[in-house]
Length: 135
Image (cartoon, rainbow, N blue to C red; front, side):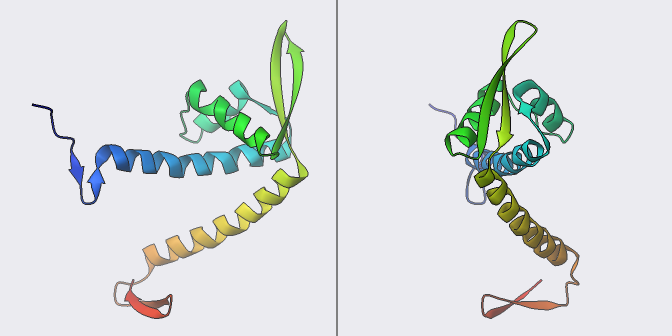
C-alpha cells in the first residue's frame, strides 16, 4: 500500500514546498538583477553572494535562472577566459534595469503592507478591497 503524503491545511507539504520555492526564486531573480545592475556577475560569484543571504541554490537551479533572465533580455552575457576556462559574465540590460526598478517599487509597497499588517494592533481594522477585515 503506498504511503500517504503528509497533508497541510490545503494540500501536501510537497506542494507547499514548491510554492515556497517559487516565491523564493522570485526574490532571487530580483537579487540577481540588483547585483547585475552594480556590475558584472557570474555563476559561482552570485551563488556565493546569495548564500550570504541564506539562499542555497544548486547549479541546476542557478544556471537555468541566469539563462532565463538572459533569454528574457533582462541580462546580457559576455564570455571571458579566466584561468584557461570560459567564464560567463552577465550584465543588466536597459530592459532589465526597467524591470528591476518596477520590482523595487512593488517590493517596497509589499513590504510596507506586510510589515504594517504584522505589527498592527489586533483591535484595529483596515479596509481591504472595499471591505473591512480585522488585522
